[in-house]
Length: 141
Image (cartoon, rainbow, N blue to C red; front, side, top):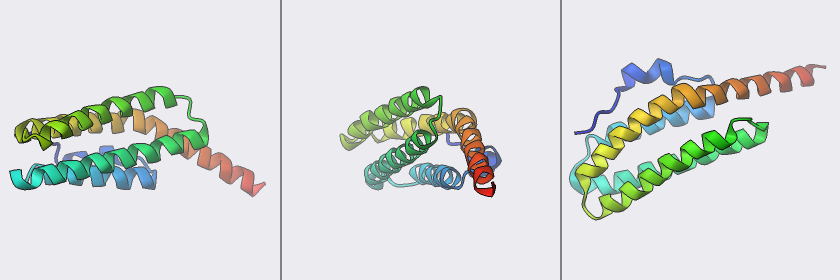
């Protein structure tokens, strides 16, 4: 069985103050929670949905980084690419029937996601907040 941090233990540390990121992070953790409780018959579809949602989330974050000229974009995008590649490879295995392997990867991804949010995404959120403050200052003058 995979180890997935509970929503209660992660809520505060996952909140970054950037609405689209916070909402997406919580939705991803909800999806991961769901994976730990679906039947083997439902697991493939649930894993594919997770993969789609992760891909969309990474795309949104990467667009936000491009919009503000985020200096850490290459490193951040590289972490996204590695995680996405691992999930895509796991999805292929899950489609072949390796449900236990998919559950393990989901648990590892949950741990990775929590770490990524509290480090890389926290830094991005800080830059986004700074960019928003500068934009507000310019609009006020």
